[in-house]
Amino acid sequence: MLKGKKLIIFDLDGTLIDSIGIWNAIDHKLIETISTIPIDEKIDIGKRRDEKLKEYSKCEDAYLAYCEFLKEEYHAKLSTHEIKKLRYEIADQYLKEEIDYKPQAEQVLSYLKEKGFLLAIASTTNDHTVEIYKKDNENIKRKANLEDYFSIIYAKGAAKQLKPNPEIHERILKELNLKPEQCLIVEDSLIGVEAAHNANIEVAVIYDKYSDSNREQINRLCQYKFKDFGEMLRYSKGELEGEELHEFSKYCQ
Picture 1 (cartoon, rainbow, N blue to C red):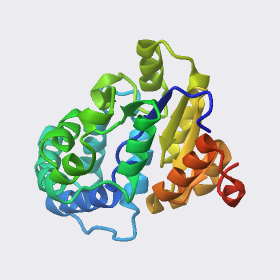
Picture 2 (cartoon, one colour):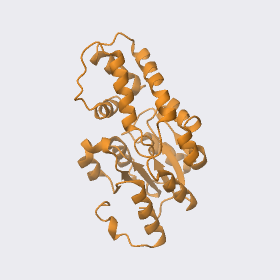
Picture 3 (tube, one colour):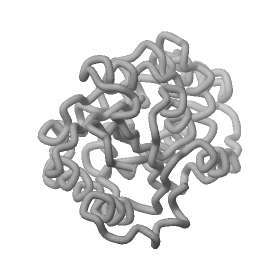
Picture 4 (tube, rainbow, N blue to C red):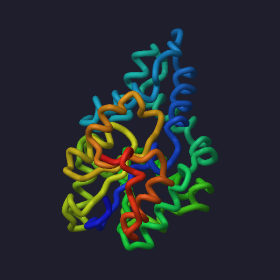
Protein backbone atom coordinates (compact mmCIF):
# COMPACT_ATOMS: atom_id res chain seq x y z
CA MET A 1 0.00 0.00 0.00
CA LEU A 2 2.70 2.49 0.99
CA LYS A 3 5.83 1.02 -0.59
CA GLY A 4 6.88 3.09 -3.58
CA LYS A 5 4.56 5.92 -2.56
CA LYS A 6 5.68 9.47 -1.91
CA LEU A 7 2.37 11.27 -1.51
CA ILE A 8 -0.75 10.46 0.50
CA ILE A 9 -3.85 12.48 -0.42
CA PHE A 10 -6.64 12.56 2.15
CA ASP A 11 -10.25 13.49 1.73
CA LEU A 12 -11.49 15.61 4.63
CA ASP A 13 -15.18 15.33 5.57
CA GLY A 14 -16.14 11.75 6.34
CA THR A 15 -12.57 10.52 6.00
CA LEU A 16 -10.20 12.39 8.31
CA ILE A 17 -12.94 14.30 10.06
CA ASP A 18 -16.03 12.76 11.58
CA SER A 19 -18.49 15.17 10.05
CA ILE A 20 -20.95 13.53 7.68
CA GLY A 21 -23.55 13.01 10.39
CA ILE A 22 -23.18 16.66 11.38
CA TRP A 23 -23.63 17.80 7.78
CA ASN A 24 -26.78 15.69 7.66
CA ALA A 25 -27.99 17.44 10.83
CA ILE A 26 -27.15 20.81 9.29
CA ASP A 27 -29.07 20.02 6.12
CA HIS A 28 -32.00 18.65 8.12
CA LYS A 29 -32.19 21.90 10.10
CA LEU A 30 -31.91 23.88 6.87
CA ILE A 31 -34.75 21.93 5.28
CA GLU A 32 -36.92 22.37 8.39
CA THR A 33 -36.28 26.12 8.21
CA ILE A 34 -37.00 26.67 4.50
CA SER A 35 -39.70 24.09 3.77
CA THR A 36 -43.31 25.12 3.27
CA ILE A 37 -44.49 21.52 2.81
CA PRO A 38 -44.43 18.40 5.02
CA ILE A 39 -40.97 16.76 5.17
CA ASP A 40 -40.47 13.08 4.39
CA GLU A 41 -38.33 11.91 7.32
CA LYS A 42 -37.52 8.64 5.53
CA ILE A 43 -35.26 10.38 3.00
CA ASP A 44 -31.53 9.69 3.40
CA ILE A 45 -30.32 13.29 3.37
CA GLY A 46 -26.63 12.42 3.05
CA LYS A 47 -27.10 9.96 0.20
CA ARG A 48 -29.32 12.37 -1.68
CA ARG A 49 -26.84 15.22 -1.17
CA ASP A 50 -23.99 13.08 -2.57
CA GLU A 51 -26.11 12.07 -5.54
CA LYS A 52 -27.04 15.66 -6.29
CA LEU A 53 -23.47 16.95 -5.92
CA LYS A 54 -22.34 14.21 -8.30
CA GLU A 55 -25.09 15.22 -10.74
CA TYR A 56 -24.08 18.89 -10.47
CA SER A 57 -20.32 18.28 -10.44
CA LYS A 58 -19.82 20.08 -13.77
CA CYS A 59 -21.78 23.15 -12.67
CA GLU A 60 -19.91 26.33 -11.84
CA ASP A 61 -21.20 26.08 -8.25
CA ALA A 62 -22.43 22.59 -7.39
CA TYR A 63 -23.56 23.63 -3.91
CA LEU A 64 -25.61 26.50 -5.30
CA ALA A 65 -27.25 24.02 -7.68
CA TYR A 66 -27.93 21.77 -4.69
CA CYS A 67 -29.59 24.69 -2.89
CA GLU A 68 -31.67 25.35 -6.00
CA PHE A 69 -32.81 21.73 -5.83
CA LEU A 70 -33.78 22.19 -2.16
CA LYS A 71 -35.67 25.37 -3.01
CA GLU A 72 -37.76 23.57 -5.62
CA GLU A 73 -38.14 20.33 -3.65
CA TYR A 74 -39.45 22.09 -0.54
CA HIS A 75 -41.24 25.04 -2.19
CA ALA A 76 -39.02 27.46 -0.31
CA LYS A 77 -39.78 31.16 -0.41
CA LEU A 78 -36.13 32.15 0.06
CA SER A 79 -33.96 32.66 -3.01
CA THR A 80 -31.31 30.09 -3.89
CA HIS A 81 -28.54 32.42 -2.73
CA GLU A 82 -30.37 33.08 0.55
CA ILE A 83 -30.66 29.32 1.13
CA LYS A 84 -26.95 28.85 0.53
CA LYS A 85 -26.13 31.71 2.91
CA LEU A 86 -28.46 30.26 5.56
CA ARG A 87 -26.77 26.87 5.22
CA TYR A 88 -23.40 28.47 6.02
CA GLU A 89 -24.85 30.30 9.00
CA ILE A 90 -26.37 27.13 10.45
CA ALA A 91 -23.16 25.24 9.84
CA ASP A 92 -20.69 27.63 11.46
CA GLN A 93 -21.41 26.73 15.09
CA TYR A 94 -21.36 23.00 14.36
CA LEU A 95 -18.07 23.33 12.48
CA LYS A 96 -16.31 25.28 15.21
CA GLU A 97 -17.46 23.27 18.23
CA GLU A 98 -18.64 19.79 17.21
CA ILE A 99 -16.33 18.61 14.43
CA ASP A 100 -13.37 16.43 15.41
CA TYR A 101 -10.97 13.95 13.86
CA LYS A 102 -12.04 10.36 13.56
CA PRO A 103 -10.39 8.26 16.29
CA GLN A 104 -6.61 7.88 15.76
CA ALA A 105 -6.63 9.88 12.51
CA GLU A 106 -4.09 12.30 13.95
CA GLN A 107 -1.85 9.36 14.89
CA VAL A 108 -1.85 8.18 11.27
CA LEU A 109 -0.94 11.68 10.09
CA SER A 110 1.90 11.92 12.63
CA TYR A 111 3.28 8.50 11.67
CA LEU A 112 3.17 9.13 7.92
CA LYS A 113 4.79 12.53 8.27
CA GLU A 114 7.47 11.05 10.52
CA LYS A 115 8.17 8.45 7.81
CA GLY A 116 8.75 11.19 5.24
CA PHE A 117 5.57 11.05 3.18
CA LEU A 118 4.17 14.21 1.63
CA LEU A 119 0.59 14.76 2.82
CA ALA A 120 -2.15 16.62 0.96
CA ILE A 121 -5.87 17.26 1.30
CA ALA A 122 -8.21 17.14 -1.69
CA SER A 123 -11.73 17.96 -0.56
CA THR A 124 -15.02 19.03 -2.10
CA THR A 125 -15.77 20.88 1.14
CA ASN A 126 -16.18 24.60 0.51
CA ASP A 127 -13.25 26.93 1.19
CA HIS A 128 -15.05 28.78 3.99
CA THR A 129 -15.56 25.55 5.94
CA VAL A 130 -11.93 24.47 5.52
CA GLU A 131 -10.81 27.86 6.82
CA ILE A 132 -12.93 27.25 9.95
CA TYR A 133 -11.28 23.85 10.39
CA LYS A 134 -7.85 25.47 10.06
CA LYS A 135 -8.36 28.53 12.27
CA ASP A 136 -11.36 28.14 14.57
CA ASN A 137 -11.81 24.47 15.43
CA GLU A 138 -9.86 23.80 18.62
CA ASN A 139 -10.33 20.00 18.41
CA ILE A 140 -8.46 19.89 15.11
CA LYS A 141 -5.85 22.49 16.04
CA ARG A 142 -5.00 20.75 19.29
CA LYS A 143 -4.58 17.26 17.83
CA ALA A 144 -3.05 17.91 14.39
CA ASN A 145 -3.12 21.42 12.99
CA LEU A 146 -3.86 21.04 9.29
CA GLU A 147 -1.29 23.59 8.18
CA ASP A 148 1.44 21.83 10.17
CA TYR A 149 0.87 18.46 8.53
CA PHE A 150 -0.24 19.08 4.97
CA SER A 151 1.90 20.48 2.16
CA ILE A 152 -1.21 21.16 0.07
CA ILE A 153 -4.76 21.81 1.30
CA TYR A 154 -7.24 22.09 -1.57
CA ALA A 155 -10.93 22.67 -0.98
CA LYS A 156 -13.77 23.02 -3.48
CA GLY A 157 -12.45 26.23 -5.01
CA ALA A 158 -9.26 24.56 -6.22
CA ALA A 159 -10.99 22.70 -9.04
CA LYS A 160 -13.61 23.63 -11.62
CA GLN A 161 -15.13 20.17 -11.50
CA LEU A 162 -15.88 18.25 -8.32
CA LYS A 163 -15.27 14.60 -7.56
CA PRO A 164 -15.77 12.06 -9.12
CA ASN A 165 -13.92 14.14 -11.71
CA PRO A 166 -10.18 13.62 -11.03
CA GLU A 167 -9.19 17.25 -11.69
CA ILE A 168 -8.19 18.08 -8.11
CA HIS A 169 -5.94 14.99 -7.83
CA GLU A 170 -4.35 15.61 -11.20
CA ARG A 171 -3.59 19.19 -10.19
CA ILE A 172 -1.80 18.02 -7.03
CA LEU A 173 0.27 15.46 -8.94
CA LYS A 174 1.24 18.07 -11.51
CA GLU A 175 2.29 20.61 -8.87
CA LEU A 176 4.41 18.05 -7.05
CA ASN A 177 5.74 16.50 -10.28
CA LEU A 178 4.62 13.02 -9.24
CA LYS A 179 3.06 10.10 -11.11
CA PRO A 180 -0.21 8.37 -10.11
CA GLU A 181 1.66 5.25 -9.02
CA GLN A 182 3.62 7.34 -6.48
CA CYS A 183 0.40 8.36 -4.74
CA LEU A 184 -2.22 6.82 -2.45
CA ILE A 185 -5.62 8.39 -1.86
CA VAL A 186 -7.53 7.88 1.40
CA GLU A 187 -11.31 8.23 1.05
CA ASP A 188 -14.64 7.23 2.57
CA SER A 189 -17.32 7.81 -0.07
CA LEU A 190 -18.21 6.43 -3.48
CA ILE A 191 -17.65 9.71 -5.30
CA GLY A 192 -14.21 9.99 -3.69
CA VAL A 193 -13.29 6.42 -4.63
CA GLU A 194 -14.53 7.05 -8.17
CA ALA A 195 -12.35 10.18 -8.37
CA ALA A 196 -9.30 8.14 -7.33
CA HIS A 197 -10.20 5.44 -9.85
CA ASN A 198 -10.61 8.06 -12.59
CA ALA A 199 -7.16 9.46 -11.73
CA ASN A 200 -5.61 5.96 -11.90
CA ILE A 201 -4.47 6.25 -8.28
CA GLU A 202 -4.75 3.49 -5.68
CA VAL A 203 -7.29 4.20 -2.96
CA ALA A 204 -7.63 3.07 0.65
CA VAL A 205 -11.09 3.40 2.19
CA ILE A 206 -11.75 4.30 5.81
CA TYR A 207 -15.13 2.94 6.82
CA ASP A 208 -17.89 5.48 7.37
CA LYS A 209 -21.41 4.28 8.10
CA TYR A 210 -22.92 7.04 6.00
CA SER A 211 -21.53 5.36 2.87
CA ASP A 212 -23.08 1.96 3.61
CA SER A 213 -25.66 2.35 0.85
CA ASN A 214 -22.78 2.38 -1.67
CA ARG A 215 -20.62 -0.22 0.09
CA GLU A 216 -20.67 -2.82 -2.69
CA GLN A 217 -19.52 -0.31 -5.32
CA ILE A 218 -16.89 1.14 -2.98
CA ASN A 219 -15.44 -2.28 -2.22
CA ARG A 220 -15.34 -3.15 -5.91
CA LEU A 221 -13.30 -0.06 -6.82
CA CYS A 222 -10.91 0.30 -3.86
CA GLN A 223 -7.60 -1.48 -3.36
CA TYR A 224 -7.54 -1.34 0.46
CA LYS A 225 -10.20 -0.91 3.10
CA PHE A 226 -9.99 -0.42 6.85
CA LYS A 227 -12.64 -0.32 9.55
CA ASP A 228 -10.90 2.64 11.23
CA PHE A 229 -7.64 4.61 11.41
CA GLY A 230 -6.30 2.40 14.18
CA GLU A 231 -6.37 -0.49 11.76
CA MET A 232 -4.77 1.58 9.01
CA LEU A 233 -2.01 2.59 11.43
CA ARG A 234 -1.26 -1.02 12.36
CA TYR A 235 -1.23 -2.06 8.73
CA SER A 236 1.07 0.84 7.79
CA LYS A 237 3.53 0.00 10.57
CA GLY A 238 3.43 -3.65 9.57
CA GLU A 239 4.16 -2.86 5.95
CA LEU A 240 6.92 -0.34 6.59
CA GLU A 241 8.50 -2.08 9.58
CA GLY A 242 8.25 -5.68 8.38
CA GLU A 243 5.55 -7.02 10.68
CA GLU A 244 2.99 -9.68 9.75
CA LEU A 245 0.02 -8.45 7.70
CA HIS A 246 -2.10 -11.62 7.53
CA GLU A 247 -4.64 -10.29 10.06
CA PHE A 248 -5.71 -7.65 7.54
CA SER A 249 -6.53 -9.99 4.67
CA LYS A 250 -10.26 -9.71 5.25
CA TYR A 251 -10.12 -5.92 4.96
CA CYS A 252 -7.67 -5.44 2.08
CA GLN A 253 -8.15 -6.61 -1.47
